[in-house]
Amino acid sequence: MIKDESVEKIIDESQQGSPLALENNDKNTRKLYIESYGCQMNFSDSEIVASILANEGFNTTQILEEADLVLVNTCSIREKAEQTVRKRLEKFNAVKKTNPGMKVGVLGCMAERLKSKFLEEEKIVDMVVGPDAYKDLPNLIQEIDEGRNAVNVILSKDETYGDVAPVRLNSNGITAFVSITRGCDNMCTFCVVPFTRGRERSRDPQSILEEVNDLWERGFKEVTLLGQNVDSYLWYGGGLKKDFEKASDMQKATSVNFAKLLELVAEAQPKMRIRFSTSNPQDMTLDVIESMAKYENICNYIHLPVQSGSNRILKAMNRLHTREEYFELIDNIKKIIPDCAISQDMISGFPTETEEDHQDTLSLMEYVKYDFGFMFAYSERPGTLAERKMDDDIPDETKKRRLQEIIELQQKHSLYRTQQHVGKTEEVLIEGTSKKSDTHWMGRNSQNTVVVFPKEHYKVGDFVNVKINECTSATLLGEAIAYSKNN
Image 1: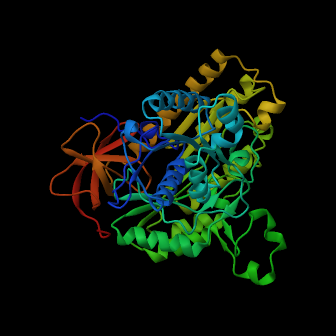
Image 2 (image 1 turned 120 degrees about the vertical axis):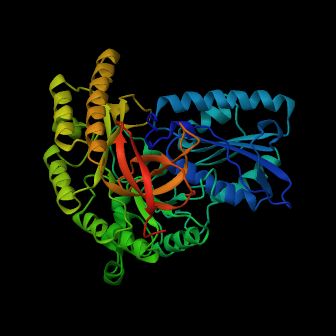
Image 3 (image 1 turned 135 degrees about the vertical axis):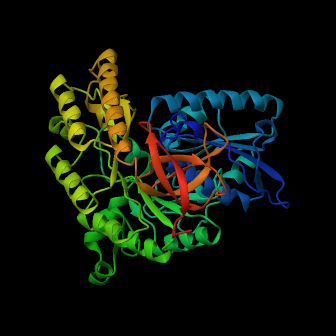
């Protein structure tokens, strides 16, 4: 019997701080060491950075001490990430004493907010680069080569990096992330993303299709379309989402929304699995669910963060939907795709949250019975509306108790959901060896649940039909019956 495999998190703890490793170009003479923290969007951005710098003469290294340039790609979502990055910068500076030619830079979401602190007050970095300024890296590197500090944290109205082919880093060669939007227009009061990644803009669908087709040619079998809020994807020739109303009639008539993009990608590569993340309840429309139902290769899984089950707290969070509207969306998903898996994000102890609000969250979970979830106690993030306008007034022990109750209920529901797969035969894409056993493969079914089964003669990248014999709350255990028709 094999124990649980860990479920895939939006912030994957096992990846945090891992240095990137790429195939080296013999002509490149300088060495780049790059660490990433935070969400998949950041890891995807690091691939773009590595691609830009490969053209500037940099090969990646995993040995910090030999690097000419050290970059840390940061996250502002959680306090822990900020403390970690600060510790890493101190470590880099200690290495700098023995390698004075080394330059250190901060990239990403933390850059904008902490630029003056890192550069001027503490003098612990040479370069600060915001998430929209990566194309400016060649100029910024020239600046630091000449002994000057370099900063570009300007947020762009149109940068989507659609024309930079990301280098695939730390990949299993089977699954890949493809960014389709940048920024976010939803001003949730607990979230710093609109301030660190700017207004929402979508990538040209043609460049997305080219990237997906290229991934297929290179042997990838699954892509996840990635965005802060994928449902509000809208391409009408470029520009911000909020300016769509000013578009010409022709632009409006030929625009591509998320449902249409999903169909284009699914049709372009009928044997490739398509996933997407993250969805926002207020922006998810029925046509997206209908597109999912129409195409077999679009996986039956939606990550649908709700954050709270209380209408009063949802309003305080500036989530633009109610509990009742969320239930209606869940009902529609289950009606159109009966076996669709749904996962959640939940925050316990948001300012002013009462015991009644907390009970509303538990009853919402009871209604939906999520397959899995990502649950956090509220922690105040600098620069957010909540930090500026609300007191973080819930005691830590109350937050922790409520969080524990949410986690325990989720574990119960996760087991209930995995039990529904037992006895069925399901298609699994093999991603690699199980973490717990060298003689077993690990892959996922359409619902994004981890499936573990004996290796036999199958290999990574195969689509296999697996009969599910037993389960834990996070993992399905079974045996392979045969290759699936997609193989």
